[in-house]
Image (tube, rainbow, N blue to C red; front, side, top):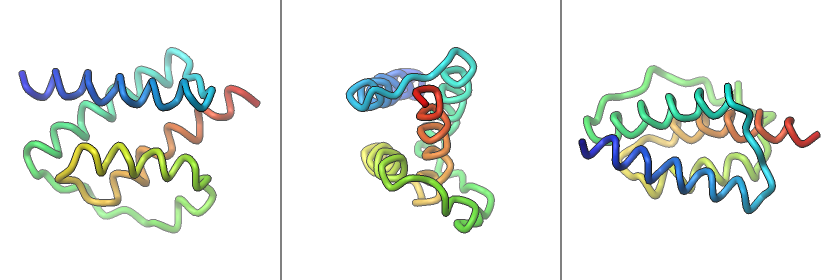
Length: 99
């Protein structure tokens, strides 16, 4: 189960990255993030493409959230940049928990 181990590793890295930025997720957000990361890891291993993503929908995502997402996607490898757009939403939504 390479994908399960990799998912666990990626999630641990994400949680640590958010912790250092004092970003907290609630239980529902954590479950959604876990589900997305599991699917993202599978896509990185299988090469399955994402449906087309309209980058304009992500104009209001902060540069910090996008930077965090791009780091995760780049570290994982074998994924298109569109994955970062989708992942960045999880970080942006979680930031609202602190507001």
